[in-house]
Length: 104
Image (cartoon, rainbow, N blue to C red; front, side):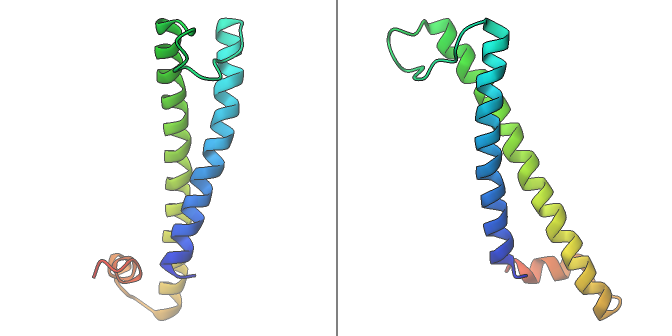
């Protein structure tokens, strides 16, 4: 698979991670506070403390989920390049990755 396919896979994985993280945020918020997560923290009727706490919590969870998804995708890409490099003989792995991602 080419680097563009891996970029697409990475983007899809990050989007899926965002959906899963959103569910985690909502259920975690409900468990921690005993009430539903604010559907719109920018609404003036939502208390500032609650809006800020929700923004911090959701940002943390979603950021971590996206990072994990992208790192796992990168790990899969490196493993695929290693498999291809193994078939070619003793080659420089970093040069292979750079060439495939147009960094050469």
